[in-house]
Image (cartoon, rainbow, N blue to C red):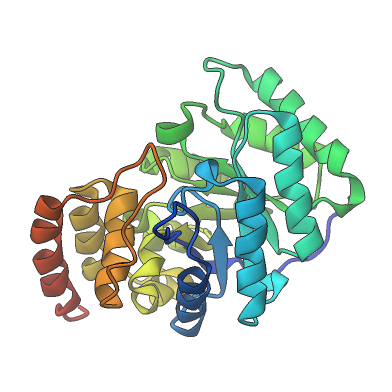
Amino acid sequence: MSATKRERFGLSCALTTPIDGHGEPDLARFARHARWTLENGCQTVTAFGTTGEGAALSLPQRAAMLGALRGVGIAGQQINLGIAASAMGEALDQARMGIEHGCRYQMVCPPFYFKGVSDEGLYAWFSRFIEALGPDCLPIILYHIPSVTAVSLSSDLVGRLKKAFPGVIAGVKDSSCDWPTTERFLKDHASDLAILVGDERLLARAVRQGGEGSICGVANLVPAWLRPMVDKGVEDPRVNAMVDLICAFPVVPAVKALVGKMNNDPGFGDMLPPLEALSAVDRAKLFPAFDRAMESKAA
């Protein structure tokens, strides 16, 4: 597990997961949409993240979805996968699937069932995870999304892990939506880790201070708008307005519904319980506002 030179991370789409009428991932729609994001500005795709309802997907479902990506020619090195499990064994099974598929990175949530855990407990969990996978362990993007997990990853913990596992700890995805938190990660770790921003409104600012890009939900919709932000730290008011619009609704269902709208495909919209599809009332509000946002011009 020695350190190795890596490429700048860039832009990755946090893929939405279309669901068929039987409550299963719609593999054809999933693969087709992933291909579209790569053809329109994304450098990689990230499956099984928060936007993709990853914590609700079983191992067989994950395997089928990775197979669908492979079936349309998306190579393992174009794929990052989200790991979301509180049980160590389940997290390892998810990770080994990514190893077998030759994925690029694994974005690993902290175990999230027990709350109020210490840095010491989290260090022990991540250490055992990495040691159990051994030399085949994929590079890890530590996933900081306390609004969902209610478990925070401190900058000190990140520093301790990267020192213990150089080359394995490759970065942090900060979805705190809190600039002081992002700024601390950048200050402490941008020199040797990929600091990625989940809130697109903070993306350009982070890149200008050493951030390496994003894994984000808006890349499902307008990846071409995001590339100048990721590549050069160029602000785009259209992106901020788009995020503000989406955040006025349940975010994960809204992103999925908008992908369906863009494709004139009502097959995008169903959710895995306990999440619910965007209501007809909310769609009637969101869709016209989205059309207006898409017509706006770059600054």
